Image (tube, rainbow, N blue to C red; front, side, top):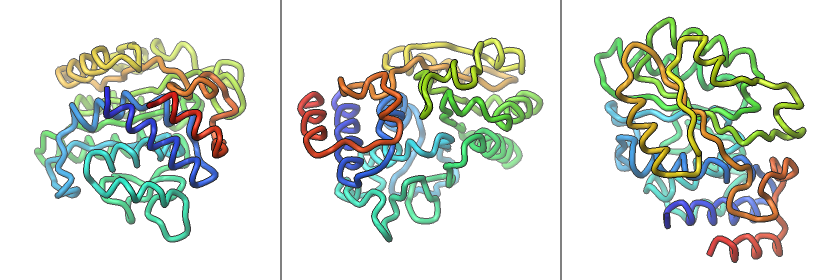
Length: 263
């Protein structure tokens, strides 16, 4: 899909220009973000505070480049602003800042908080009589945070069927394989035990992503989690399945090589 390819190129280019950032976990979430921002979520870039908009929370806030690229491609701000990533005074900081960039719903970065915030948004929507849906993207390494499971328990307790969590299950975190650092497995069984509807999909297959997101909106009486099996660094051969690319910027020659692969 052309949009996903542009987003991947934007990620590589902006992180390379900044000289720092998180390409691996951004590239693994490209198809998920493309499906949400271009096919599923009800949005109006001209009115980022439109009360009826669907909400998105990037709980794994270090993957800000994929959020910035999706917002720019969707029209929330000019694509050339992506070149200011991590520069002093830029609204595109290393982690999302809702006060400085239109389209960012929540400032995130401290892992484990996003699901609880999304719970609050979903509960507020119900209390206000609005029919918007809330989406939250979690990293699989982030599932090691205890607050995630408190949030999972609360979402089921309040029957938040207007909430969908997506786990970017790329199996790698900064220190190595998630299963070896502090295994959250079996992820599906744990969410199911907390009272969630659970789906497992290929997180790079647009058909499976869109089908799962559509089915999630039809679930009644409980929240849904979509466990998306992905590849860290997806699309760039020398970054794929490499924990070392969690938070490292490519050098200029590596940027050129990556862009050639993504042409």
